[in-house]
Length: 395
Image (cartoon, rainbow, N blue to C red; front, side, top):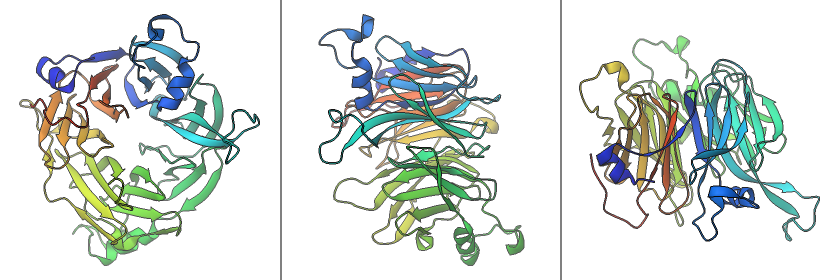
């Protein structure tokens, strides 16, 4: 598998090929990978070999696949996972605690077992849960979310829009049952009180618009709206932290964001970045302990490699690596661009794809693997630099 620096210079990366446009990608947690490797045979079962990463993808035909990155073969396939012409919009995989009926498998302190679920979301208004080891269906939630806002999940629940009026909903991750509905009126009032409305919009007609992106971190739900406002909902208080809201986060309609915790010793502090229809991505910092949030003054341009039309400027995929050192952006021009968080300097550009990048994802390994899903039907895989490494290839 090529490194990002080598792929930047050569334009080559490991590819996983779909017949349809690939719209979603994520890595399986290591727990699920070990379980699925039990009894494995063939190319991926070499004794003593490094454990390969497993990747989950979803395409425009509604097909889910689990891939072995060592053999570059699909080990599990679930066709028609979602109905409709838009197929699978999003996939994520996470470990959840569930009551165990088998005492040998249960955690001795809690009586629970750790299970890995794959969640898939489609434009058919449904979210479905699958077992990571076999892609067997667990439950289906009818969310009535027919837009392009992607769900976000914690270890106990997931969130997605409900309707088109900015309302959100929380769903139980174990059962798929609706738990809570959240109104965004408090954010709208703050939006109006701060005078953040565009000049051509009256208070009577004011609206946050659609919810465009969601992100769970700890017990906090971040929601990015069409108007560019970032709302922060604290689950323990069941209220929006309106004093910490950010408005006009992006100049154009935002499409996606990624947020990570600032790390040990910095509780309730988060770093994030948003991308959308403009030609740059917007970093921001949220500190709930100090009840402050701010946009970073510097913004990283999503530079084009040559003369292109303005319609190809923009991005729909972004991921911040867990160590806070690297940000990957999947652009509409088919490039994948990596930036250092602290300086926003370019760390490499991958020109592998002929179609727009729909999603990017980091693995948790060291060195991490970066996956990018494209409308050209391919998923590119490049290894990132080790977390302790300071030497990068540049554009």
